[in-house]
Length: 378
Image (cartoon, rainbow, N blue to C red; front, side, top):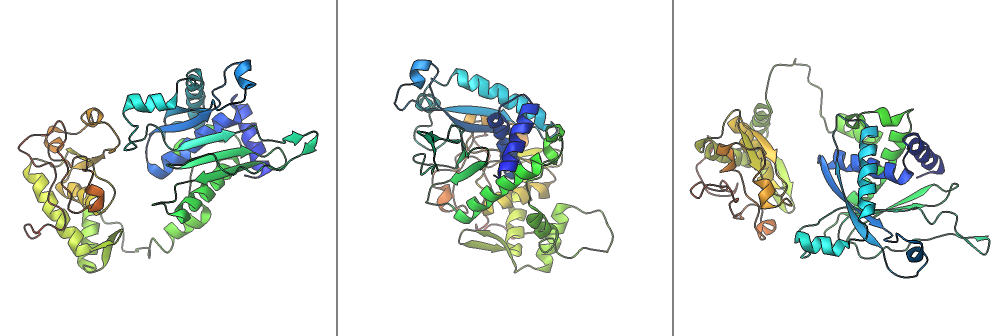
């Protein structure tokens, strides 16, 4: 982040009467909200863990991690989110001596199956213009330790050099190109958001994360030719079925090494829709969808739409008690897909999830998979 953009960050923070690190927490939350669609986030914020003068002058490893729970509402302004972030950071710092490991143990997340807070946002504002006996230094942050998820480190390089933003991830199972794209996009997002006058007065929904090149790609080559045939009323299901009829053998979805055509996806969605309709799901209902992203996930969304109902996306990381309180209708709650089993990630099309805690013992927890030899499509 250039020196000019870093200075602009500090200037906007002063206008909101917060530190630049709090403003950065709010902006990072906006970015995560826009790219994930989640309105409730729990960030991991590393802190010094030194609350006394003696602790600050004693060598040793006292650092800790504080979970920050933030709710990002698209209709609110950035200023409102900054105030919420400031209050949450202040609250978290009061409890920074409570060890993060103890919180994970009490929450039952020590086995690594779920994370209490992620990703990590480590703001290090103490490296700026470090001197040794009056001589300037050039600092190189080599590593902050092991990384089991996305870890973002922000280093203050001084007034002349701006900020450095590092994105660290594990090596296994990570698309490095995608991570690098997020790093570049987040840096560009900061510059774009901070450029106008009074950026804190803008609505969060109006803060765009796309670069100009990405927007041109989405609205140009990827959007296809612009239709001049008018704007006749239609539905998403109708448009999908038109595409399936026009290109039945074209690839519709790619999930790892698996590919399915439009005809296969449409047939599977029809089977699932008939199954859901037979259990009472229809127009005006809400169907909970609890599946990892993949072919089964896309098929479930299409099937729900084909019944006339709407879907509610459920997070597999939520505990069972919270999932049971999601706003689904009784008819759809008994037939919505349940939490995937540990083996579900190995073969998304053939796993058998366990039923949710509030499901009927007689109603199937999930329809047959797309590859199952069931009744031919209508």
